[in-house]
Amino acid sequence: MTREEIFDGLNEVFRDVFDDDDITVTDSTTADDIEDWDSLEHINLIVATEKKFGVKFTMGEVTGMKNVGEMVDAILQKI
Image 1 (cartoon, helix red, strand yellow):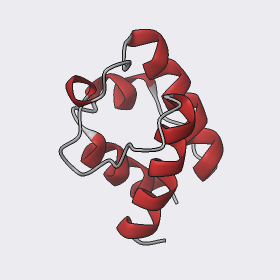
Image 2 (tube, helix red, strand yellow):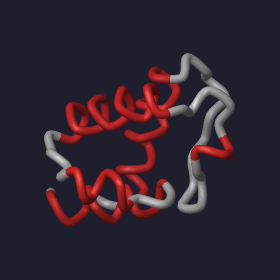
Image 3 (tube, rainbow, N blue to C red):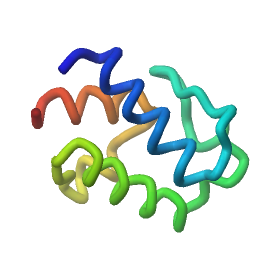
């Protein structure tokens, strides 16, 4: 799976979790860039991402992710 394919999948996840079809994530996207991205939605986002890609993140990985690019890197390492 390529980075582009992962971004396509993540765009679907983000649009579904935040109920906003206009969201397009990039490497540098953070919680500050998406209005409703709070701690509760972060949990929903992680769970939906794990389900979409068939991966499991450790607590250290989840708390260490600074942006969507780091999430993509973590997914790439697991698939």
